[in-house]
Length: 265
Image: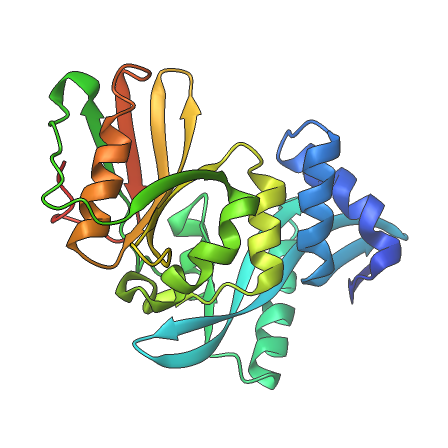
């Protein structure tokens, strides 16, 4: 007998095993840490077949900043089924229950990063963010000159940088175009999920953070995860910091949901 229900802490292990199988992930201490963090902050839905979990998904409550207006938003993730239970409408049932609960809770928006646009359009989703990938060879990087030496760059781990970059992110116009309002738990989640991320933080002369770049080295690629700057000085310092890695990496890459045509090195 099939039963749709909201899952609890006692279902965590079974949900995690479904997650590992459905997305062909390998178990590790690090993966388990960030997965548990996500699970514990989400609404958990599942369909059990004779008491055994066969399908599941998470609906994670967030808020977004839409040009200064705060809206409730639920992020949908970990939509999955074991293959023997697929094709029977389980995902439709899970999505419908999540939508009903969002409506009851006055949630205005829902985000997801779909593996298939055609599949999720049937539930009312549509593409609203373009993803632009910039790739530059190290031999094409310019020599960035600082007009006036004001402030400094410090290189920190993401965990060390969070107290300095939270306010920069919250006040940056790029995060106000329906961007996620990052609660403390979400910053902690990013640290757990991406332990190798590093941050270059620009500090003004009075040691106030005014810009940052989150990045990691992936083989021969310098991969920029996020960059925020508040003025011309912070932009120059961050640009020079990035370009000074030219001898270490052959390719510099930045994937953005908000095309930054003005961000040219």
